Length: 312
Figure (cartoon, rainbow, N blue to C red):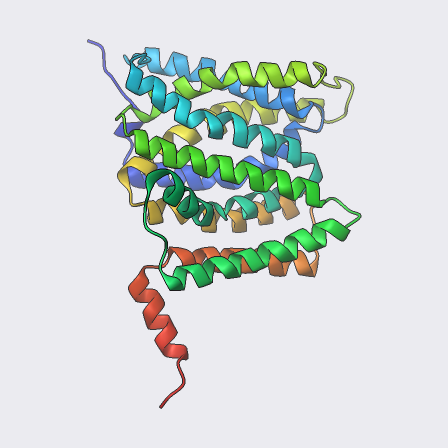
């Protein structure tokens, strides 16, 4: 008897925890994978390996890779995130600390609200959330200013690439929700991975088809990082994320982007020798505080505002 298992078999709380762990560690492994591999090749090999693994898992668990119109639309909606956002992140990885990647992706709830307004005609956020978004953008301004005049491991160009990556990630998430095809999370992840591969191949060829530096001291570490990202970052991480996206309110899903930067920054400092200047730390704190305020329910925002109101 054949037993069919999918990510849906996971309790949503387990999927949520998996996403937090994977997203906390992914930025560091992206940076490590680009030490010996060019960005185009590192990203492409990761997605190619992930597509093969995901396909085997789907087949082994009795599933099928849907090819109907609704499923193909879902794969296409995911592609701006699987290719666009990830490719730009790989390009930015050598130019910024891994922890900062996670902080900037923390802006995704704010940008997702803008994308939802543009692509799904959803209402604008309440005034309190707009103020919180402005706080987050003020933090981004601190980071951009520090990056622009830093001579170290951060530059404004890398930050700009990450911001574009976050925007594409948000566009992708909104489009997936709009399509609403009801495709199993693992199946839609597999389909999107395969659909993204030609774009990675074109990007690699357009960049001159660079090869990895096999003699680099970090070559073995980069190979391990690509393997980790393929199995956990792409297959398990994406599948669990889209299960959470379908089964939990958007605010609960977006809260992940506030939790993971704290862990990602700590891992970068402890395991990759990264350091952050005072302005960058202040900027990161403002971003996370603004995003947290943006995600608070409206009644909580009004209650907090009332506490700060001067007494009559």
